[in-house]
Image 1 (cartoon, rainbow, N blue to C red):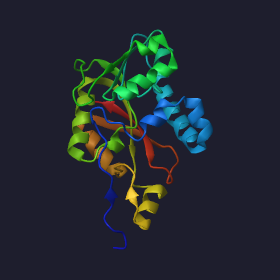
Image 2: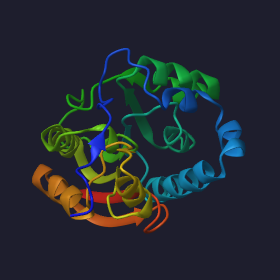
Image 3: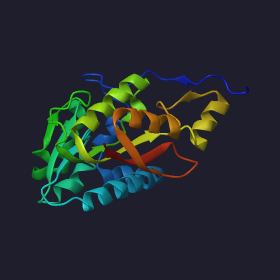
Image 4: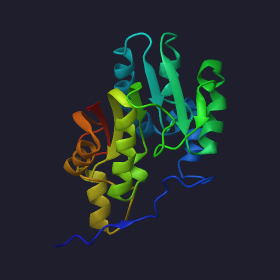
Length: 223
């Protein structure tokens, strides 16, 4: 086989007080980030389009959980609907602090520190779970399965999540060049199997740029 085993950087999942490499990026104003990076603009636009569609389909009174919430990039769309309830959780204090840059009182009132492996919510109490840009930080399948089992426990409707796929040029290029792999990509089949085992059915996968980018948005249904 001409490909050597992949080389990964250490996992950045769930480190207390840890300044993840993306924290600085999230601390920036979205418009500033987008002006600097057209690729980031394209990826973010597709991610948000998927999330906004799921939000639009929610009936009044629905409860939405955004975890990890980061600086409120996704939660802000929920907060714009006064007929929805929102809980924004993140394990990283820096991410929660970054939300203050939005200066949106409705959104800021929803934030709290929380652990995706031990969600402070009742069983089958959440109508929509937003869980974006976290799976690719998780190195082992056991921890990933624990996360999705906990999400499935609280979810009674749709879960919109994401993962990084091995079925794309950016991943393959790094493997061919012998470079360290960014994040912890998985095949679509392996990801779907983790979800099924946790009690989630994958309904749709939306690559942000098919066969090129790692990021894939996924819409699941709780069982």
